[in-house]
Length: 436
Image (cartoon, rainbow, N blue to C red; front, side, top):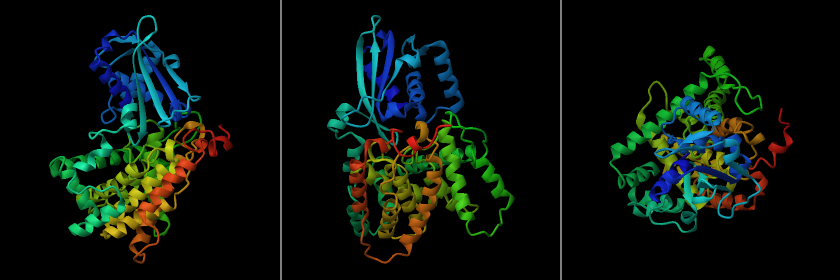
């Protein structure tokens, strides 16, 4: 969606948008192989229509895409109405293996003769971030990855972050928030964190109260609503394992919404969007809830996420699911440990444990849909995150494995992993589970 919006902006700046007689979209690599199952075709249409991820209502978005498919025309945002048949004008080129990043997309504006008068190459690099070819080849000082240089407490490793915490006698979340203070007033940052939690909470609620079959043809039934009803019938049950049930139901609620094309928060990605909300919901969104606990959780989790983004990748197409569910588990473990009052070293340890036991996790969605094994994998990831935080709080000092080492191990594992296990649906469960 963001790429569609960015393309139209670039075309306007080049003064060619109003010359458009047609538009063509070509999806390459993982975007092509799992594009339909992941909703990439739908998303790029919405971007070209002018929809934005933060404000697009799922029902309105579905209706808008349906009109484009029926009318075979698209009204480009702030531009002309041109013929557009998604079945023909969105090309799925899974045979093209991109060099810079597996998620490559080319958009073109065509003239009346079908010739290209403007085209751009973009990449979806994970977690909602996008980049042009130029940005990937040579990042500028204005790029997101370079932003920490302007922070009062810049860090590019967990070791550096811990040293800053020691020097400043501060917690991980304190340092993250102080860095954000250099960009905007603290109140604005807190407001944005509150908005993120509000979106997560709304997503959980929608998932808990919606039943039926998920789209895509696998005939997967939503389970969160039924499980939630059963849990509500026995709220005082003393079964120890019910902890798992609550974490499971919250994570599944989010990822069933994601599978249905609803609005989720990339945390760090859509495919791993259920883990952080589930842990926050169970441990922070209580009758005696303090909003500052949720802000602490999100700030600490974001700090850990930054390390993975800078030192490796959060893209399943590059790292496999270790870069999605594994990173989300690591982030959630750090966030929960922070809320529990962990020291910076314990927060780092929680993040390390969360990833260490997700190393090598493949991304193998059946039929390219974010359903099997993705929904249950988020539930398992939420439980792992809590256990990682518990282990970190009770571990001996001087652990043998550092977070930096585990991030580098994830990066190396991702590079060594066969392409078929990295969001292509060409290996693993995707080829061994009968699509029926």
